[in-house]
Each structure stands twice: as C-alpha cells, then as structure tokens.
Amino acid sequence: MAKILMIQVQAAPYAGTAYLHSAARTHGHEFVLHLGSDLDPILRCVRDEQPDLIGFSCMSSLYSQILPIARRIKQQFSTPIILGGPHPSFFPDVIHESCFDMICIGEGEFALIELLDALERKQSFVHIRNLWVKSGGTVHKNELRPLIDPLDDAPLIDWSCYAGIPVQYSPPIAFLIRGCPYACSYCFNETMLKLYEGKGKYVRHFSVERSIQEIQQAFKVFTRNPVVFTSDSFGLDLPWMDVLLKRYTELTDLPFVLLLRPELVTEPCVEILAKYKCHCVAIGVESGSERVRRDILNRRYSNKLLVEVAERLHSRGIRLRTYNMIGIPTETKEEVWETIDVNVKMKTDFPRGAILTPMPGTKIVQIAKERGYLDDDFLFEDLPTTILSHSVMKKIDHSWIQNMLFLFQTAIVLPWTRPLIRQLARLKPNVLFHAWFYLVYGYLHMRSEGRSLLSYASYVFANRKYL
Image 1 (cartoon, one colour):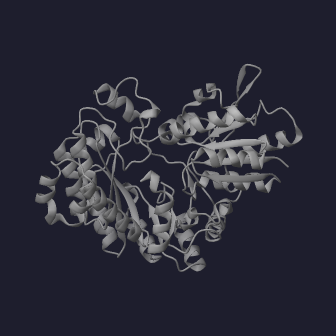
Image 2: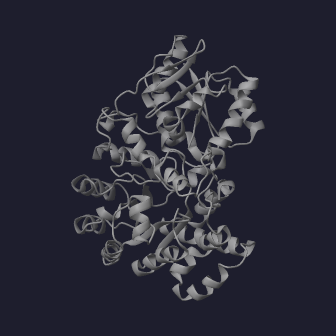
Image 3: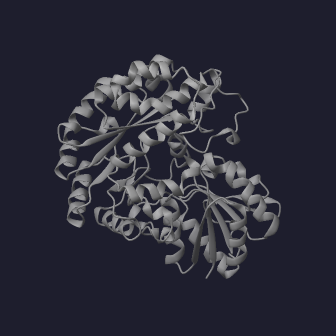
C-alpha cells in the first residue's frame, strides 16, 4: 500500500479530488486530505503522515499560494511532489520548478493508480501516461492516454475525504457530464479541446444508473440541501436528462439546481425541468452588451433570446440565477448598465456579479494585451484569488468597477435604486458598500440553492479568506 497526502488550500469540495480519492482507495492505497494553506499545520501533517507522495490540485488563480508551500515542503522533506489540476494541464512548464517532481496533465484517475502502484512496488514511474516526470536531469514528457469513455469506467466518486470538516456544509454536488462543446474566450475549454484532439469523445455523460450512484455518494457526506448539478452541458441530451431526472425524483424529494447555456433552454428542455420540479436554473448572461458578448467573450446569443429564456422558465415556476461579469476589456460604463438592464427585463431572481479574472492562456488575455488592458508580462502572481475581489485590468475606472460590483445585485432586484446607485458609484469604495454587497450576495446565493441558513453560514465561514 502506498500513501498520498493531498493538500488543498481552499476549503471547498473539489470533484477532481473526490475522484482521485476513490481511485486510490479502490486500488488498495491510502489517501489523506489536508485542507488549509497555513504552513505550520501542513508541515506537521507531512511529518506525521510520512506519505509516499504529496499532491496538489491547482487552479491557476491558486498557483501563487501553492508554489511557496511546495517549496517549503521540498526544503524539509524528500517526498516526491506532484502537481495536478487545470494549471499544469495548460502550463506544463511548471515542471521546471525545483519543488515539483512531476505533474499530471488532463484526467488523473488512472495515472494516479499506476503511480501509487509503482511507488508501492518501488518500480520506475517515469513512463506513466499523462505524467511529466523528472529523472536524472531529464523531464520525461509522456503522452496523454485517451479520454475515459465510457465515462462509467471512471472510479465511482468518493466524497468521504471531506467528511467531518466544514466542506460537508456544501450542497450535494453531482458532476455528471465531462467536457463542454463551447469555446468562450475567458475559459480554458478551447485549450482542453486542442489538448485532447484525437484522444476520444470530449463531451461524455455518465449513464443514468451510474449518475444515480454518483448522487447517492454525495448524499453520504453533504448536508441535506438541494442537489447542484455542476456540469456545464446539461440540455445537450434531452432524452438522457428526462430519464435521469425521473430517476432522481424517485430517489429523493430534494429539489435541484442546474446550469444551462441559454441556447439550450428550449421549450422541450423547460418542459422536462418543470415536470420534475426544478428549483432553479443558472445561466450565463455574462454581459448585457451583444457587442461585448460577440466580439470579446465569444458568446453568440441575443438579448431577445435571454428574455425569452427567462419568460420560459418563469412561466413554469422555475427560478432563475444568472452569472454576469463586469470589468471586461473594451466594456463601457453604459454597457455595464446594459448588463443590469437585461437582467431587469429577465426578472432575474438571483443575479450574481463578478469582476472578470483573465486567466493566462485564455483568449481573453490575448485580447486584453492587444488592446492595452494588460501588460505583455502579465503573470499568474497578478491574479486575485477570487472573482469578487478587484480588477487587474488597465484603462478602467477601478473605483467605479469596485462599487458597481458591490451594488450590482441591488440595482437588479431593486431597480428603483438605479438613480441612487449612479451617484453612489462615483464615491470611493468603502466598508459600508462592501458589507452591503456580502449581505445581498449571501442572501441571494443561499436562496438560489434553497439552502438552510446554518449550512450556508458554516460553509461561508470556512471559505472566508476567499471572499
């Protein structure tokens, strides 16, 4: 038996970590998860657990936090360190950091199984597919294995690594579809499509039977709240969705929340959702300016469609949550107000606003650099750890953008406040605006997912440093 210690700096449930946990345990290995970014407890954990492997799952926005932790671990311990997750998949050159012994690119379940097996047997692991491994001054850059297909071949998710810690106050999560067919400019999806070109079908669904098992696994750990289907591509396969939701309602009386692209919220889709008493649908408006959506974000739908989608959902008693961004390159102040206006026309129940975080490696960064909104040497270290923080863009009114984030939701749910907000947005950002924002944000977020106050407050407290 080999032991892996996974270190996760953010107190949030990661589906990827839960799948790796299952992969390790079902093949006879030990998996220990440490949550938190404080260095001393991490070093004590490494000393106490004495793992054979230390792993980090890394999003780009957290890389600047993870790197110094990995460096300190490497200074005191000889244990090999592997970096996985989205960041090394898109930026494999991080292998040249002296603290990382290997990186995992793409789907990691079967690569981890082979790696732990090799560690247990004290065999070489330099040629395991999906891994780049340092050995003898050489970096072995192994090819990607095909995408897991059928998806049911993946290990059944095991959330129990999060049991007994604040993460369990998250709503039950079911990630039933992998892959997305769209190519938004601010998303890594286009890069992932190219990465896996020729490696199998990119968008894959679990079978209905397996999907139910995935949901049941979430029920074992998370508190009793409405289930959140977190995949981006619900609505692509309506017959599958119909059967799945029928089985879901036979399994539990809990309502559910799911994500949909506006183009997929068709009449047949909404009929299915209404039949099975969907609590809330979340869609990405992103910007109310059709120019910004088309030319900058590569999201090609009209405001007319957005209003029709909202009417479709509301007519069947389904609530609507929208995702919106401000601080987009070339976006004018009036176009920010267009985003507010389209949400008002949609009668959005639970609007959410965020400041655009441009992830290096995405098209939006190239666009921003070409138009003078980012410097050519823009780095990961410049990224905020949360989309609710500040803008890294140049050529924008930072105080105004910050205030508009603070007052964005209020302007939509209380449209009569618009003249007042126009005046308040000119002021210097302050603690009162900040406090008001979190009060409104928390209330709407909690209601959009139908969560209890206790479970929501516990989860927010555990993640307060990322808010």
